[in-house]
Image (cartoon, rainbow, N blue to C red; front, side):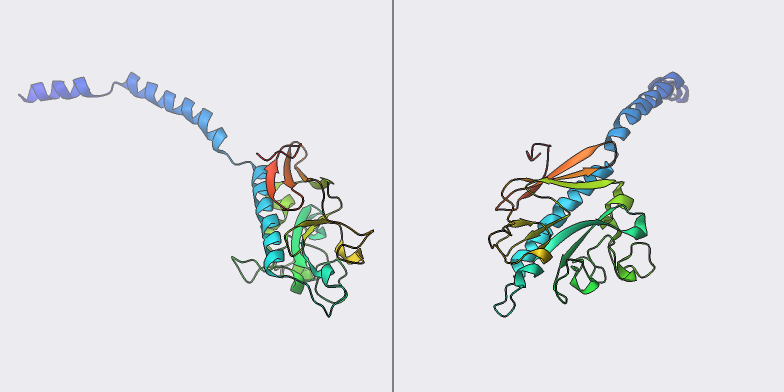
Length: 233
């Protein structure tokens, strides 16, 4: 009886050849599947940026800067500003701020920068010029390193085209996107300084080899990852 059980076990067990075959199949599947599950840093950067553009619009909707006693109230609208921080070798970074201090120079100061809702001790900047606390490489940096697109995601350039240009986008109290530097505007919507975006704004992120596009639509300010023709994907 014992001999019969041993023979039955051997009959039902894997042979060495079968085990080797299984391992080879697993290796082939892993070689095919694993590369496809790797993250795309440029794609991650675009997803993050879309979220933060929408957050900038949200701040504009819930924190209206209008004041009847301040003739320059419109210069304090919430905006997202793209720039290069010398502390991180001049690579692209961005800052979300409301230009409320002093005479609204257009340059963010620490007190003007949005607070990270997930960590109140951090400001929403990837590094910008000014105080040491805004320098990406300084020990007192209070920003968010992920907002530094160059060091975190390998982004080498950020370009604005179509309905926008320069290096910043802001929103009015109705969530409509506005192009340009508000510090040079003479009125919220006055003739000659009318800067409401009237056609799709295309933001191009590049790592030197690949491009990915983000579109901000006029009037509604809806933001999405898109193709080069501003079709959301």
